[in-house]
Length: 377
Figure 1: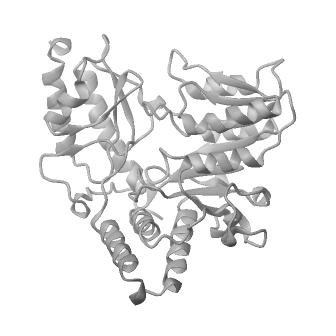
Figure 2 (figure 1 turned 180 degrees about the vertical axis):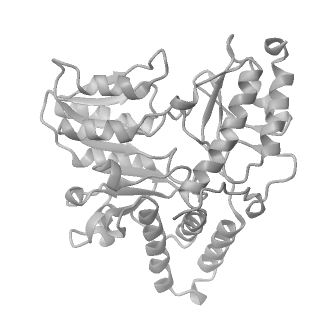
Figure 3 (figure 1 turned 45 degrees about the horizontal axis):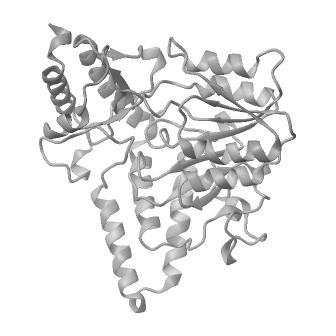
């Protein structure tokens, strides 16, 4: 049985200088030492191809595929290697041919890569795109369940969902929502960009038709690599880009593999990042990040800033709002104090990962107290 002890800080694996509070993993992560080394080794291999046979690269690709599969409870044959989540979602929309008159369901202010290909699908197939607006109380889960079951609504064809709202970390509880989507007979598409690597994700629990995630955020890898899970009954479609490696004889979701698959730089980097996540374990990572965001949320509330209640937020992303709106240039002012975050949806988005220490949170709170002096006096 897994210990419930909280994972200690893993800062030693990164090149973060003392005094830097990098709380922006939801944007992109720094590279661990081993991930950087894997990339440098790949660059050397490409620089000296006569010394590095190409036969060495496919096993590296398969290692990354297998690690990605294990991280979400899938089999390697269920995973396609793609270039980005936008690439994955375009592949997904390319497969689907729903009957006219149905609904595609999503939440408000969703990330474009989860909207644009499905807007095109809706226009092509005669579907209605239904957008669930942000609930006043922040409770996305009841709002989505109500939309799915709304009497008299057109049939639900496709639900394109995420485990949290990307702008502020408010929870979208797929443990409750996924069964309702399945009961409606709809296709479930999950963008797990802001989840895999930070919290447990299990395709056997949610049973999505498709799920995708990149490596450059929470799984500590490079830009330009993502993974697409396709359920076994969704593996006989047509890829967007066709090449020698993904002919109809390709096994499982490899049918959707990208071209120029065996990248000697990016795939070994992705594998090293995934390996670290597997070593630490998503449950242990999640517990550590919850302790950090809870500490930050408590401190922000004491300053008079607004945060969602614990029941409506995820462990690893915290949205913070100022009652009067954020002052202009707040991100730059934080950066001047070596605090790094993002401004999203009219609020601050803090997203610590395993390199963050408790002192980083305290430094952030001290900076916020300096920048928002009026609200806590």
